[in-house]
Image (cartoon, rainbow, N blue to C red; front, side, top):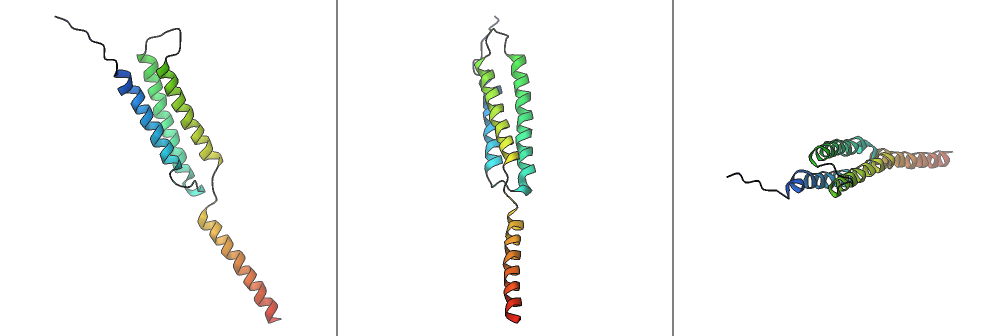
Amino acid sequence: MLSIRRVPNFYVYVIATPCFILTTLSIVGMFWTPNIKKEQLVKLTIGLTSLVSMTVLLDMLSSAIPKTSVFPLLGIYVVFCVAITSFASVVITLHCLPNPKKHHDQKQDEKLSETEKETLKTSR
């Protein structure tokens, strides 16, 4: 006897859970530490890699789900996750802090130049 069963959690296991994990890990990975200029490329790489992975998931979703007249809720969810990761990548790109070591060295140079000026004044 042939038995055909529907597996309702298939899309949750194959598409929704990996998309949630990718989005969560990319957001945590991008914003875990301060966004200094030196680490900006690494953080952007995390975001772009997860975007490529979610695009593959979106392609899998479009080929696996039957065509209907309305956009499926699972598709909206994946597009929303892609939008969140895209926005985070834009924020990482536009907002970065100066290199703390370089910034610290500039402050020390300013203090040194002030003390040098004072020593020059007192020596005259």
